[in-house]
Image (cartoon, rainbow, N blue to C red; front, side):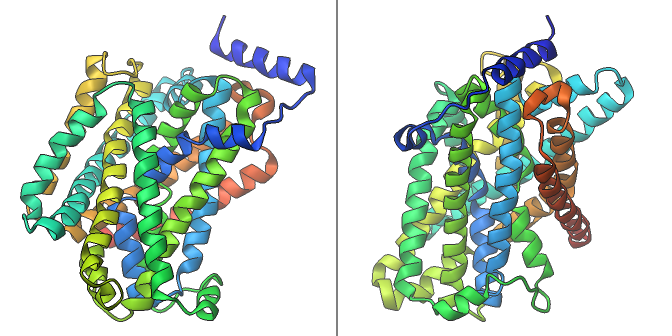
Amino acid sequence: MSNNTNKSTIAGENAGTGAVKTYTLKEKIKSVGPGLLVVGSFIGPGTVTSATRAGAGYGYALLWTVVFSVIAVIVMQEMAARLGIVTQNGLAEELVKELSDRPAMKWFMIVLVAGAIGFGGIAYMGGDLVGTSVGISALTGIPTNIIAPIWGCCVLVLINIGDAIKSLEKLLTVCVSIMAAVFVITMIVVKPDMGELFQGVVPRVPSGAIMTCVALIGTTVVPYNMFIHATSAHKTWKSPDMLPLSRFDINVSMIIGGVITGAIMITAGTVMRGMAVNSAVDMSVQLEPLLGSMAKPFMSIGLIAAGISSAVITPLGVSYVFAGLFGWGMTKKDKRFFWVNTAVVVFGIIVAATGFNPLTIIMMAQALNGVFLPIIVAALIFITSRSRVMGQYKNSMVRNILGLCVFGISLVIGVSSVLSLF
């Protein structure tokens, strides 16, 4: 029996019962996990740096981009998770299956997606390693190009021990909690102007701010997160009646991610307005009158947590994409999966050890992300709109409209990213 037949059977059985399973708040809270993988991935050094620069350069004026990014990432990650739960497959596997009767198109998409995710992953890996190293360097004084390779080796160990998904969910729960505590407490301490803050929710683009807007949105809606979320969702939830748990997980996790990003921007907009920013650690200088000698450690710990959370997800996300595209096993027992994991980290170490300005590496990763984002968004909308793939759980008209809005914005991001590369 084909996989599509199995999916239709599942959809039919659920339709026949006419019942929607309800869950208690306790059950929903216990279900939070796969969404935190995504938050841990996108709240990395790139987000911390972009949000810090946005606050320093434009105060609270770009806070609306955080609100938009949260809405966009909820829409796209919900599609990815629903796909994984209904089909019990990942996005890459379903994309290959859907194009199986069009070999030329199938291989074009395989090469395009593999190249996009591979190159983007390596760029992000370099930025993640450098970002973590910046935080450690601020505490120890050791140069980042020495710390980065050592941290890269630690990442190799972390991603290849035990059940990767379950181990990382626990690790990232800790990292996200640390980031939330560090950045939200810092925001409260600096006492932002609440009137001006609420004005920042109204969309407007100050002169010269377009690329900052692009960076903020592009660092939140990340292509490989859609692949890894589909995979982690079907490993966690085995039937469509568990979709309410997935949606709760997504909504709570993405809002937490938005609060962290907003807190970073608001803090920078309060204490760093008009300053040049080379690293998020720069924010600690302006916090010394408030936090004293703890200012630099406080910000460094937040940056380290952001770097750890993002760095351990990046290679795993690339490996899941390649495994889905080429039909590999999705565990380290499959040597091809293992070597892709390893290769992403090794190339990331090389990028990080070159001594380039950390900000340059991080911004280059965001630019590459922006180039490939529209392709992945379009593929996800296409797959989750297909009745023969999703059955009764295909996208509603509202979800398609929201998805197309995200696609439109992602096109703008893509064009802007190409221009920024030159």
